[in-house]
Image (tube, rainbow over all chains, first blue to last red; front, side, top):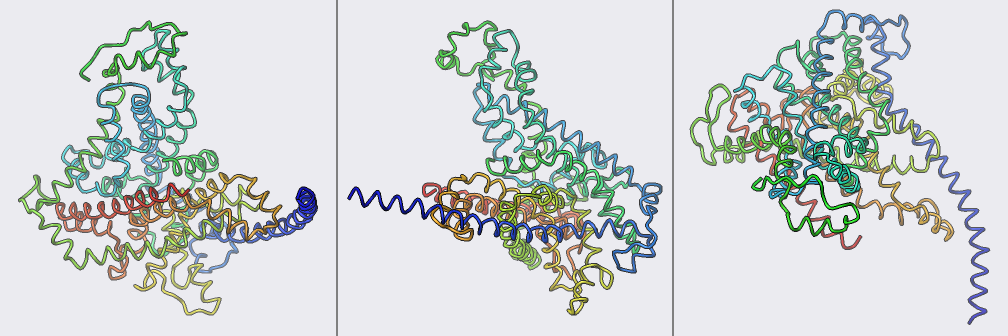
Length: 295
Length: 317
């Protein structure tokens, strides 16, 4: 019995090595094929963006000649859009609303999360569940009552109409709470022993440690506000204060067959987000993976 | 809230930290005031713009509220709901939404999974894949719509010309009622695939390396590894991706609003666009609120179904 076991084991190790070596070769070949196929798909995925850029760099007249080749490359479409249209106003509207929402969400949600994570009070469970339920409510079902609500206080067609409803993002509270729960309580308790109030412990001890959560929530609320269409479309009808998506959606018919202008406007609308993406690529991807799987 | 006693600033000295628990039990409701102050900014906005409108909407759905007059209007009982549930337009919109979900969900899941599996095998160029697949996802819907309207433009669009160059009859992408939804689905797959791709990549990273190494020693090839190790261990990610995808597809509005305006001949009018139309074109707030509530119930049913199903799966995993 003993010898038998010994023999099988010896055999299997030798065999295993050979297997492993051949499997290794196969795997490497397979991996290379995979990379090739995926590169083809990735290029395919970039074609629409490249085509939009290509079109935007043509003079309007040349867009009816549908080739990738540009005979007279020009930035004229971009110049015209920036000079005559409301594009700069849209940029301002999008930047102001998105930045204020991002800041507002980070501050309010992190404070609420700190209370839920660290403080003990009678209606903690109620606050917790009330906010949790908010994750289930899609903001799209609220457009009709919200429109009446903001109309009745004359806030429609102001930046506030876009900013205020987007600040209370329930999921942000839970992203912060989860992060705070992972920070040792000893740290802020030490600060409290030194005489700091809860707010100081939150602002000066916990928040500086929560930078990953802060940046994830800030980036996401910024991008969501920047990209949102349905609510700003209803809330803003004055072209001077429209956000970029609303402006693009509203004027898309008016360019008619000026395809280069249309694509230039699309590129201008995309540009800030492309920059955000290139700067924060890792944070965005980690944020999705983290909140998507744990949330 | 009831107790407003501040905890003493000087507490038991640090060595007694272990006793924290007992001290807390002695005064369990100690932080009412600071808690209220810190929760207040969020809760005020939350009540004003989430809870308030939600309640207001449900109330409104039982009235003949109109956009052009103030007040709730006359009480209508369940009339709005009855009308919606017997309305051909409502069910058509429901079907369009479902059809869009059916057209987008399988490719968005299968392609994202396949791309993630391929990317996992690629040693280099990961940043390039992330860029290519994920970049479209963070673009505004309006930008995506403008680009794809141009892609689909009859005679001139890149996609139109590719099809004719390949010898197919020129499809009228957005103008043909039978094709419009497919075209919107293609655009949506291109746009949002990156999100699922990233979720799958994260799921793949959680699979322990040694499983692959052990199976390789046992002589398993790549295909067997995928079938016997990767897919089963990804099932949690898949169930999450599926439910997020279904809910996202149910909420579709932007693409239709910009690219087809719900047409041609209302063939692509989704549920949200129906709400938009009856609420803001017909000015029937009460009825639109009822349709919104029905939409919410549908979304809630999907997420509840998911929770129930994953609960049942959990012990096996």
